[in-house]
Amino acid sequence: MTTYTLRKGSPAKTRTDVVVIGVARTSQGDLAACAGAEEVAEAYGRRFKPLLSSMGFRGDAGEVLRMPTAGTIRAGQILVVGLGASDDLTHEGVRRAAGVAARNLGNAATVALALPAHDAEHVRAVADGFISGGYSFKRYKSRSDEAGLADVSILSDAARRHEAIAALEAARIVGDLVNRARDWVNTPPNDLTPELFADEVVALGKELTGRSRKPKVRIEVLGVEELEKLRCGGILGVGGGSASSPRLVKLTWQPPDARASVALVGKGITYDSGGLTIKPGSSMATMKYDMGGAAAVLNATFAIAELGLPVAVTTYAPMAENMVSGNSMRPGDVLTMYDGQTVEVTNTDAEGRLILADALAMAAEGDHDAIIDVATLTGPCIVALGEKVAGLFGDDETTRAVAAAAEASGEMMWRLPIPDESREAVRESKIADVLQHNWVRWGSALFAAAFLHEFVGDKPWAHLDIAGPAWNTGGPWGHVPSGGTGYAIATLVAYAAALADSTGEPAVDEQTA
Ligand code: BES
Ligand code: MN
Ligand code: ZN
Image (cartoon, protein in one colour):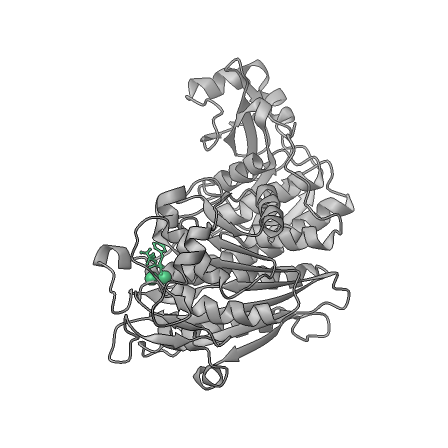
């Protein structure tokens, strides 16, 4: 267990294993100590910059240098993290630098963060980045000898201000749930079947209780019998091929002071083999992360409830395993969805849209200000936008609000269209109401979004295709670890917070000193 404290204090006089400071690069190519680092720089005096330069430190974002202080300041070591160009310091830059710091502490037990934290927003960025960047998944490592971090102090002049204390508290709530989502995504598919996934959600819901010890969020788990009664042909069709039967988990956060209402829907394919339209081996290896959308919306809902945001949230997480067996759905099958529309299946590997169709139709029955779905939906979206940027689809108003929340959270997404051409293509089934897939290679992320649109009708709606950013194939960067990233939670929480502030949109990330 790590304890976090926010306090006023001099980084030069703090007794701790490691002091973390930020150093940026000026337009002249000079090094510049950032806010929070001044006293450390002063203690080193004129030696400070030449010392860093002699170690090859340039102040670039992502750069890190750890060295002994040899008594220059009280701490045993300083960890210098690069913040990039000094005239372009953003909250996201600070968040990423704090994440880099968290991963480079060596075997320190205590650390003091002297990064820019002069106001509540910066305290939030430092805490967010540090909690997120320190994540690692060790559940399956039988030999792990790390003692772990005991104490983290965030040094801030605003330490006694109510907003700063609240910012740290919020960062801890959201950070823990982002890390929980990563755990779920990283858990191998044999240990996270739809049934076990639903159990995890119920267990987490029981942990998160209010003062009365009553769970804050209502949880319903629908099994096969209930799904049959509700005629959820998409979830049953996809889940039918697996020995582990499908589930639909529904969460409800209904605060008494709700000012708005949102429905969230997340794709929960615990493993995507492709089904009879089977994937090549190399594409299958990481398909445990095909439940990243469900992990995101579920944890975002818990975070919104823990923060007590006055926004009602109804969340649907359809869970199924897409497998090959005598009970698998076939290309050629016609399924009847929850809303009664029939769908001609032509590619069992386009399974995500089928389970989402039932859940979106359910969400569309409610009276919500917006429906947002989050799904690792298409490889083609990764082709379009790369691994770090999500595709954002939907109506102008909803996508604008989601994009603003993403901007404030530092999550990268980009609007893509649903052209009439795709809207027509999904109606071109010869035998059913809707065509699931048309085997045209071009624009298939758009086709998938057009398919989903058929099940939300004209309701305010945004769709996030997170096939890229839900998983980090490469090494860690900023506060983002390898493997499951927890992408979209920060945006969804910021979106709900902005809805709660009747002003509409969150403050845009400003330049910081
Ligand atoms: N889960 C995949 C999408 C995916 C691919 C996520 C790669 C993450 C990384 C989805 O179910 C799928 O198989 N999509 C098809 C879409 C195609 C049928 C238009 C794909 O990517 O090939
Ligand atoms: Mn698939
Ligand atoms: Zn899939």
